[in-house]
Image (cartoon, rainbow, N blue to C red; front, side, top):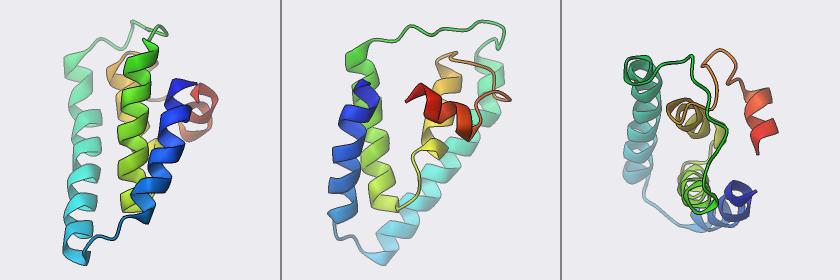
Length: 106
């Protein structure tokens, strides 16, 4: 619930910001590259056998707010950024972190 409480209003604020086209493309490229690299190297960082469904509400709200704000600025869904975060926090395996199940987390 903390993820939703902060991500929705911050996504609205991020969407209302006027940014230049050059900054938009840089932000889009960097965030998508970060998400892809995070998912690629995360199997080396953590063991996928361990699952951790416990998360602190303040930490979840903070990450949700950042994801919402960046998603609003870029104009794409937050799941592209939420899936690597859920994988890095051992929420589940990458194969099970599909968009349908990410929304169940929210």
